[in-house]
Image (cartoon, rainbow, N blue to C red; front, top):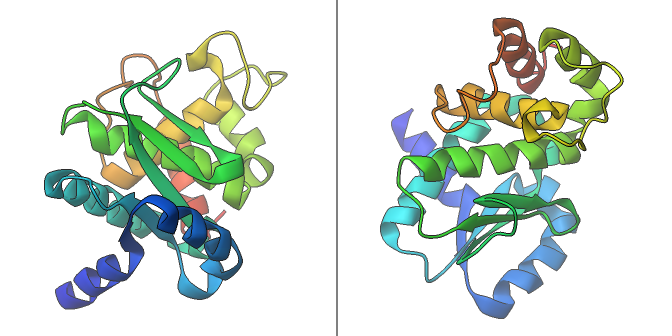
Length: 196
């Protein structure tokens, strides 16, 4: 079983550089379902960062097996500065941006959080479990799913934080800002396992 997991990781994490990433993204959008979910990592990323990506990606996929068909291809970009935060996700490009330098402790959580936003948009979390998540989290039922004045009151951010905890089994970065109920964690986990 361990050999299979390593083999699966090797197929899921792909290292590319420069123009190759753009070409694969254009082609990858139409063939992602056939190949399964993939994350594209720039070739010049240090080995220790690649190891963090591989570990977080494997945990993410293991936590959401019923969503592999809709995850598709995600591109990771490491940048010197992310406007308005340490990480961001851009759905139109399936692009996760993480600010470097960061710490090895924060990196997997930042990645899993942004992958949570991808999971939401690519796999329809809002449509399928959004209303129930708002209730289990005690959020304003009239609130917009993905916009608001305060970050910690936005339902999509609560979903992304739940993805972090379900995928990694822990949450340190925002645990003091966003408290997740056991019902929310079960809802997101069940949804990711096709039990909703």
